[in-house]
Length: 300
Image (tube, rainbow, N blue to C red):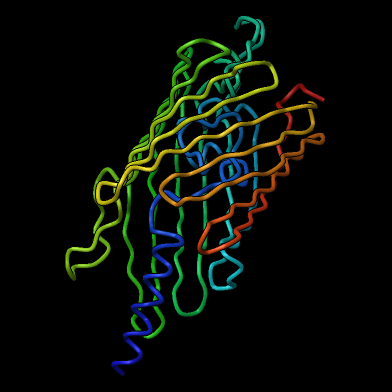
């Protein structure tokens, strides 16, 4: 029995190092750009990472994704995101749309905001995490704000399961329209408790970053992520779009000593992204995500 608990402790330590409970990654685009979570925009996966982005999504979106870390079957993740806009602004009542630095203009944002649903499962038989989230985002001019409530359940074989509810906030602002965007998120602002033993709580994580549209085809991103109980993580990413349907990406994360890269394809209503990351000690991680974007009413 003692040996079993030792093995379990080692296993949980490995899981924590590879996939600590918290906001996590959403979509291969984020993973390819150094694991960005606050400044990406204009797609459903970005709306799962920063709930404020939902406010600009004027088209219904459904996305599915799969991730594997370090080629270990027990470190697989499956995810789902859904975004549903509420109402549309009349075209004659708004000025011409102007693309923002990585996002749509406020004139094209849904009239009453957007509701988003997210789900994710990580792990295997010995240890698993399930997350369900419901969020809402709204855009007013060049500012986007949002809030999300998330239920997290952790399960350990032979030891049962625990649940916790975490609340999160997000915001983005176009400091220079079409050029510079600031984003920030606060995960688990209520400091949800996962277990009474040693007062175990979900991590409280703050992310803040900038997205700079250096040229029409070039997007530069930087971000800092701080868990209240860990050192800060500095991230940087570069996205280059040689063709309207193709994006090439690269990034890095200092805390995890990980280099990342990937590609993105757009064909009609489909968005497909692939990312790979290399950790100097643990090895290769890969992620694939896809999304379908419906046209707005009145569009072909």
